[in-house]
Image 1 (tube, helix red, strand yellow):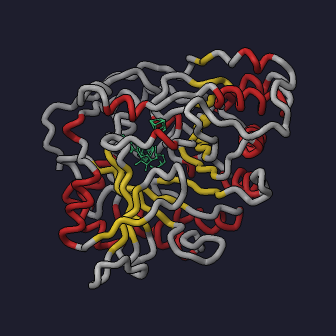
Image 2 (cartoon, rainbow, N blue to C red):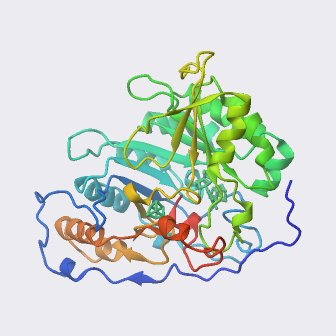
Length: 394
Ligand code: SAM
Ligand code: SF4
Ligand code: SF4
């Protein structure tokens, strides 16, 4: 349980209304032709992964993301008219796919709170990459509404799902989600997702279902081993995420970050691990497989992942863009301002103009916050002005 004595919740500075000016080239019609080469940014990184936040609301109040003290009954969420419609999201996603995006992750807030989400998934499942393949379509959820929606999501074309779960001890988990939500219901949701077929990819391989556990030192580190034991051999990939200084309200301090190398060491001492090759360029997780008696990876036992956003920056091949609930394009999880694509969508811009704008914005990108933070004093990131993760999407 938490060892902290005084809450360090930071009041919210609302950055949602701030927007960056579009690059001037985007004002020209046809600045980038449809058949131009796919854009890379100023650090040579392609655009491959788009995370779309479909709502800024959530039914949990995880203290590392939407602390109750800030996201209380007086907090003003975006009005419905501000949200991108499903048609606007699909149009934008299609243009991103034309610029090289291959993977789309729906997130939030809690994405399953958005009504009829399966209708959006059905639309997104029709899109194709520049190579003509279906997009890799996935979703991150707290699991609270997944049991009843899993079948419909799968039928609509969702391929995979990531469920967040911060521990197996009910008291620890209930206090971390801060709405008294029980572990058993998340585990039941995971079972329902597996039963609906969300645990296997198109070729029938396991590993489609992932579980994200945010590790906060002094809060849930004692849950690491029970979680690793629980998911070992199930085909579910458990990923440990370092507690990040996203947003500005969670009162982040470096001493609450448990480095991923400590997580790996702890598990390795109990269940030997071997490092595995990364699955794709730009993948956030470092992969570790459970070893057999001869020290080789045992595929039947499966693997874990660690996401070391704080202690080991992976900006050098970061190929992710984020679309906020109201249609702003953010180039980094730690950005303080985004580009207002909704103004283009609702202002009558053509597909070619919007694609050109996105391409130009990406071409001017040089964000690498985590790398720069490594060079700062340990707590330098604390309380900096940044948009909240629930708005920009995790
Ligand atoms: N509500 C959904 C959920 O919790 O899965 C989707 C949105 S949530 C913002 C996406 C992911 O970000 C979750 O796995 C969550 O645990 C993680 N996350 C949120 N705040 C974080 C923080 N401060 N540090 C690390 N991960 C965080
Ligand atoms: Fe909600 Fe997900 Fe944030 Fe928790 S991490 S408050 S479930 S958006
Ligand atoms: Fe990408 Fe920004 Fe994270 Fe670096 S800090 S990996 S650029 S999102």
